Amino acid sequence: MTLTAVSDAGPLVHLAEIESLGLLSAFDTLLTPATVYEAIERGGVPDGLSYEPVEADEEKVESEEPDAAREP
Image (cartoon, rainbow, N blue to C red; front, side, top):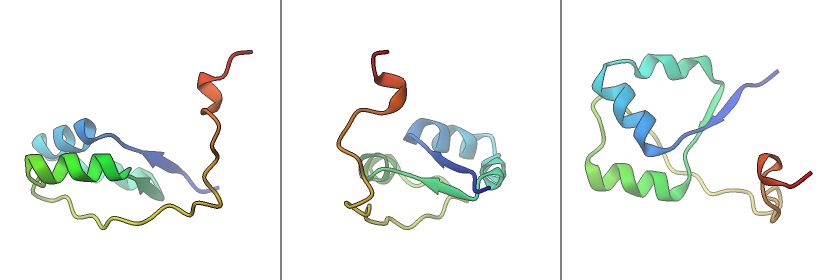
């Protein structure tokens, strides 16, 4: 089983502040949306955080709302 996470800028910045970016190694894949990438760059990339932006495979991206947001 592959464990994947999607992160916002805040957790990445704050984990870096407390020198705990190593906790992210619990995930096999960490995805950061383009807007998060841009926010991190505007605020300054925290020491110890290295990342490379990738493009989403549009064929695999659904146009529907995430499951948690769907009404029963």
